[in-house]
Image (cartoon, rainbow, N blue to C red):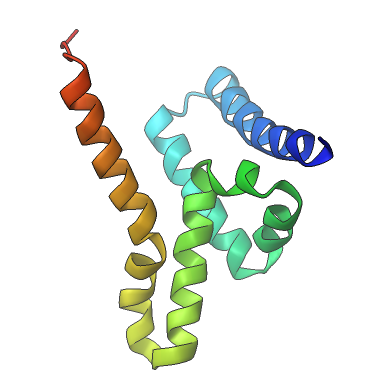
Length: 118
């Protein structure tokens, strides 16, 4: 039960930060998205986000900073294995599963529901 609480708290804190930014600044949701992904990359570059993931598990990897974390982790791994070419292939390899899942599930939902424009 304690693990569920940790996941909920870490994911909730990330979402609260985003909500506070939307309510108190003039940043658009798209800019907040970019800030969160970039923050995930930077924090992983310094080794900080890995510690957040150890505590929050999926509460830290599912939100947007988690995508940046996956990008940075993939790049760092590929650079270690393949040198400078890893900069170009690491992010794609590190996030391929998540991107594929988003496309597949998005397609399935488009088949199940009739979307309408506003």
